[in-house]
Length: 342
Image 1 (tube, rainbow, N blue to C red):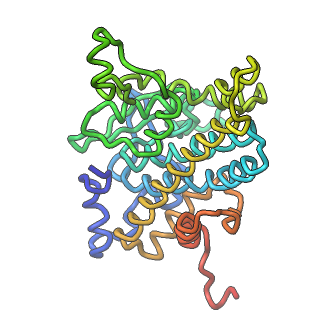
Image 2 (spheres, one colour):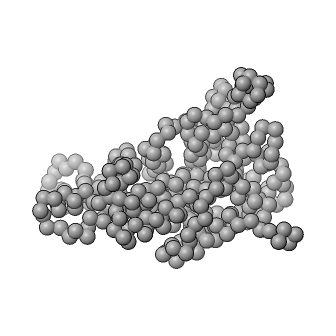
Image 3 (cartoon, rainbow, N blue to C red):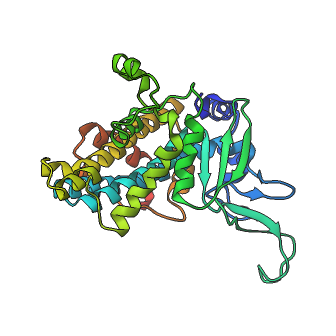
């Protein structure tokens, strides 16, 4: 179930029908507690979101912000791959995918929030001696999860790349969840030639597919290995296929062009995941029929306080991706000027 098919979808229906105005959203205006571009939390007695009733709104700006951050890295990965700069290509593909995963999680009811605002008691010195509640940054990422019962639950996470990728394992653990083709393709490359334990050799010969590993058979290893590609490419300067490299070092016959298989696999993964997220975002904004006022509210939370570089969309080779991304960017990164301001 999409997050907008939940109870929070009712909120959007009220806005579209005119029963609820954007001014009714306390999170969308400047107030005495400050201007929040992400949900704020209280940790006493347990972690709770202060904007829980409106949390569904944040899915759109959080998904868009993450996805917008990814595109120039994908373009850089593509250019590096064409030049056979394998380590930079893998590093850029990984970075693009890392940001896109944030959008993918949000669209699937899991908001990954890095150090969200936390309401605490002022101890007299944190804000010029004023008393009462103030806001500071929570010292850990927080994941807000929408359950099947349409309730948000909150958990903190470790600050690491591995923790972010491991969140996908939690999402895909259920056999009801659909694993995108982009993940399956990367898994097939990473675990090619790997099989389940074989006790009956004859049965294995007759039914090899029965023993083929799937993502759910080794999610911990699969998602745990993805950040390692970043480590080796970025810090060791190595982005070649390790098996092809070993074969070449041993003097075995192998096509040297296959050294780029790893970079090809990660670029294909990043591009494929980005395309899937882009399609879903385009469909979402189209189905919601977002008004100009609400579009402005979303845009503020996409670009403030941290703006995104202008995307070099003309360098995107994929026609569909270029067209869809340009549509999203025009909607949520372009300010409509009034006649008086021109």
